[in-house]
Image (cartoon, rainbow, N blue to C red):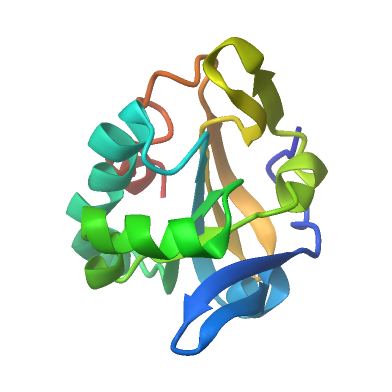
Amino acid sequence: MVQVGETLPEATLLKMGAKGPEPVTLSSLTKGKKTVIFGLPGAYTGTCTTAHVPSFVRNMDALKKKGVDHVVCVSVNDPFVMGAWGESTGATDAGIEMLGDADCSLTEALGLRFDAPPVGLVARSKRYALMAEDGVVKVFQAEENPGVCDMSGGEAMVEAI
């Protein structure tokens, strides 16, 4: 599992652009910037929709006051789903970049993949939040239980920075 002090791995995520899916490299999001990334099990799932994303929407101003340049939500979903979910939750309007880790490569490189076949979740992300400066992890907070959003929520990240 990723640790404080480590450099984030290179990965290509996908976002919805004006003309369809567009690649976004993790290095372009983090180089020379203070970036908060939060990962979660799935778009439109319970805790992700009712607690995790809203916690970052509520805390965008506080994060910006702490010098955060970008806030990124990552899920092992396609960019079409992430784009629609960002619109429906207000995350996009709040300035959160909703990115799909469609092939689970970033999630696996971070050591945060989990599987829960009984509920239809295979190759998904554990719930976490991190803050990186120039691609180096400075804060990392992960949940033990994917149904809980305490340490990985927006309020906890504001406090940790």
